[in-house]
Amino acid sequence: MNTLSSLNRKTLLKELSAEHYELLIIGGGITGAGIALDAASRGLKTALVEKNDFASGTSSRSTKLIHGGLRYLKQFEIALVREVGRERAIVHELAPHLVVPEKMLLPLIEGGTFGKYATSFGLMVYDVLAGVEKPDQRIMLTKEEALEKEPLLQEEGLQGGGYYAEYRTDDARLTIEVIKTATKFDAKCINYVEGEEFLYENGQVLGVKCRDVLKNQAFIITADTVVSAAGPWVDKIRKKDNSLNNKRLHLTKGVHIVVSHERFPVRQSLYFDVSDGRMIFAIPRGRVTYIGTTDTDYHGDLNHVLTKMPDVEYLLAAVNDAFPSVDLKIEDVESSWAGLRPLIHEEGKSASELSRKDEIFQSPNGLISIAGGKLTGYRKMAERIVDLVVKKRYNRFGEKIASCHTADIDLCGGEFKNYKKVKKRIAKIAEQCVLRGLTAQDAGYLVHNYGTQTHIILKKMTEFTPTESPALALLKAELWFAVEYEMVQHPLDFFMRRTGRFYFNIHSVRQFLAPILQDFKNYFGWNEQQLATAIQEVERALEEASCFE
Ligand code: FAD
Image 1 (cartoon, rainbow, N blue to C red):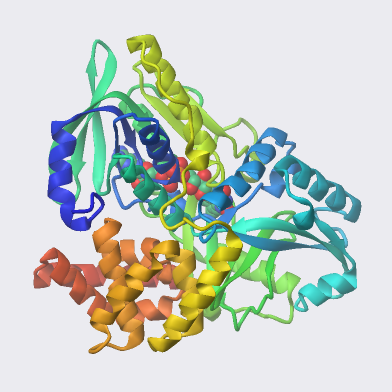
Image 2 (spheres, rainbow, N blue to C red):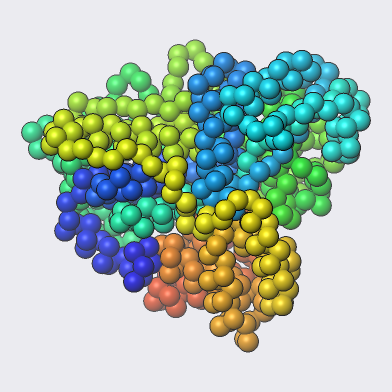
């Protein structure tokens, strides 16, 4: 059975408690996933535990851009811009279907954040730092050209635009594909297992007492080194290790809202000014446009971060100010998500001024923690952590271990030569989709989500086709795939993080909730009570994503 099959859990749990690991990672967001892949591919015997679902923390709540972070240039974070800028191209090559080129338009308005010359210079520096190739380098647009690219822009006050290259992704799918790739190198990764307490020998961390959250059973995993990649929870874990010092996290909340593309029909991605001096994104994606983000200090429950009415009002006002003809209303918001940035606290700095750099904390007890950083920089962050683990092993055991080679490891589903091949595959799959009663647009969704694995889902779909509508048959096939290969345990894992439908096609979630949850019941042997609880949980999440207090 596949290691990441949801139905393989018992065997995996047994193995985790029976074996000793060279590295145990706490946290299955992009950072933990990246570390697992880097370590396992260098030959380290690696395990990873995630207390909820993979990517259920910040790694499914980002702006979903693999970007150099233009705004960090404004803060003179040159090294950060250079590193993540260069990483964009590498991550694109590793998964060209999932990290796709996306041109960004930055409208220049009178009194805006960036003036014409500063933008031109800034974007040029951005291109140079990121090593962007000639055809993709920034172009400065006149007012007329900017309006041609985006007719929704307000003419008054518009001075032109900067037009530059970024990449768009699905953060949760990127995380799951990194986890899947790590398991190919024999990493043992499991979700719904919480690291609860550290175990020590001679004052050094020797393992972790864990809890299987689904069965409420405790067990122990031992390891030579433990790394905490727990994102916003990193300080809580450092506290458990008694190693929390003056350097702490500063959590800020970022909200995105989703409206139908019909209501905000941007032709392309935009990064535009808000009246308070910040800038936000509007990104078209299939049948929707999403808008974000906010940036406010957060002191609430880390496990239940909600979009609130003031967040939504702020984003709607920002759009309506910049695009008065659009006139978005609260009723237009179909879905939303809210996430926490685990930033490093700096005295006297506001949420937006804090650095996005990652930080490594080493405790005297041997625990290594990493927080901050960007989705985009996950591979480099992983390299730094594993280099540290390797150094420790050399000092302790005299062991020599290979250096990082994740830049050469295609992610699962990403075995395309280049983006042209992805586009060709989409065209081919579109023909198959139409033949199966789906739409040609479904091909884009499938290939961008699953890449070269799409054919497995389409093949499975035929098993459901005689009795179900094509749309439901597809969803059932996707669920089968998620159970078989992607350790889905709960309907929200599936709707939010394996398919993204909860955000980008929320109608399909409502429409097919009952039959899909019936399939969950069958796969997992739930009783009626368990089914009823799961339905309630999904309905509550739907409400939280679209109704605000
Ligand atoms: P997380 O994804 O939060 O992962 C930590 C995991 O640890 C969680 O899943 C949690 O459940 C688990 N955990 C915690 N405690 C335990 C325990 N005791 N046992 C087991 N597991 C535990 N970056 C970009 O590059 N591009 C963007 O467009 C972008 N946009 C952003 C927009 C917003 C609003 C935000 C908030 C961030 C954005 N970022 C972006 C930053 C990026 O999303 C984060 O840097 C990244 O996702 C952090 O990943 P992580 O794995 O460190 O943390």
